[in-house]
Structures are given as structure tokens and as C-alpha cells.
Amino acid sequence: MVQIREISVTDAESVATLSTQLGYQSNIRQTSARIKHINNSNENCAFVALIDNKVVGWIHGFYTLRVESDAFVEIGGLIVDENYRNLKIGKQLIENVNIWAKKHEVKKIKVRCNVKRTESHRFYKQIGFKENKQQIAFEMGLIFLVSDRNS
Image 1 (tube, rainbow, N blue to C red):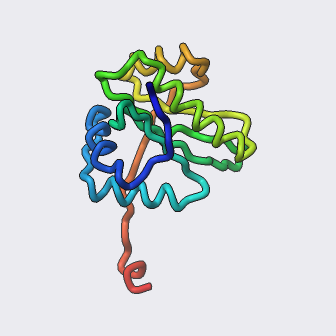
Image 2 (spheres, helix red, strand yellow):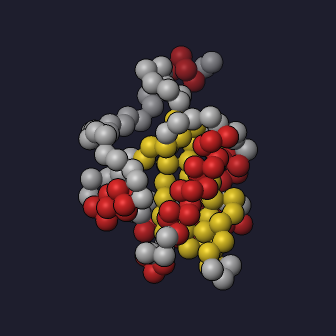
Image 3 (cartoon, helix red, strand yellow):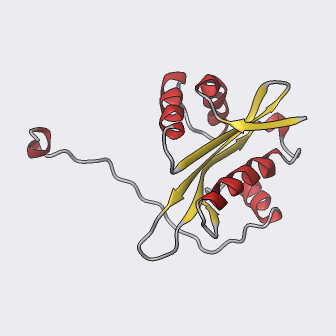
């Protein structure tokens, strides 16, 4: 039987290990610090799925406010251990974010998914998500000016 609960710092090792299945390398210290930050934020939620007290999945959601559109909750990450897929664990994790989102009075949950994750695309469509656009994501490291360091 699957149990869903809020994420805890004690889950850091399992969460970091699962994250590698998504292609994200994290150590326990980094993951623990992120979990602490999320748990101390009113605009973030995270849950884990357990089977026989073993973490087999996790989800992170966050409240998002935009100038051009109504607020929504976005799924920042979702992973179910590859050995425990097709047991409706991902859907249960999303349902917990949905409950959290309702408390924030938003009308939508959104998720971004790497184009190469076609299995994930099918999953999201099967549980009711609809594709609304395709994007290219850019990122840039912060540039620190000398005057920034002296502030």
C-alpha cells in the first residue's frame, strides 16, 4: 500500500538517489538543504510516496505569480522509482499537490516536461493534463560586478 506524506529532511538520501533517475546529480547535503528551504516556504510543497517505509517517489510544487496571467501552481519535479511505475503513485502525488494548490486558491496546475521524456508526456495526458505550448528554455549564470561585491 502506498503512503503519501510531506517530505522531510530525513528523506534527503532517497530523494537524491531518485533524482539521479531524472538525470540530476545531487548529494545528500544539497538535497537536505533544499528540502529545509522548501519546508520553510509557504509557496512550496513537497511530498514523498512510500511503500513499506521506502521512499519510491517524490513531487515538488510551487506557487507561481505572473504579471500576464493568473497565479498557478507548477510542478517543479516528479519522479517515481522506475521499479514502482504504473502503480498510480505519480497520480497520487499530483493529487496531494492539487489539494495544496486549492488552499492557494489557484485554478490551474502546470508542468513542464523535457521533450525527450515521451513516457512522461503520455502519463500527464492520461491523467488529464493538456499540452498548451512548446517552448525553448534558456538559462544564464549570474554575473557579479565588482560594485555588487562591495555592497
